[in-house]
Length: 128
Image (cartoon, rainbow, N blue to C red):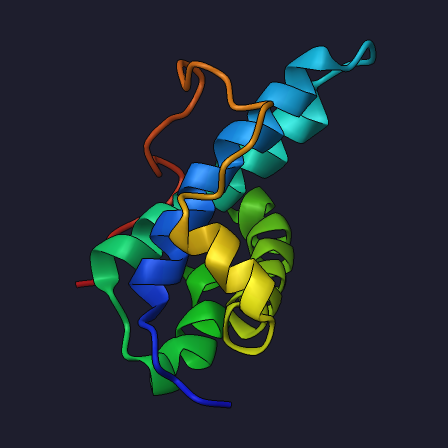
């Protein structure tokens, strides 16, 4: 796989795409708590990846180690699952031209909300 784009670039675009997921979540008629937790875990992971800006060839290892940085041990499983999902999205950004174009355009979605619900990655401890 060609590593032409940095993980931080992909993760920044994926953060923009979370707005659409949050907009869709708000439209659902069922309990939104599990969705909100999952989106918060993913947002924290993406924000950390943008901050840390790991090298492309080290990104898979960075993702594998990310759950170890959770301050809340009960989130380690969720963080691990999200890390796998982000790795899949990272690979898609390199292999599917249409996905990369969508990310490059800022991941536009009609479902993007006002962003008032996103939080910082307070569930993750610093490793530096």
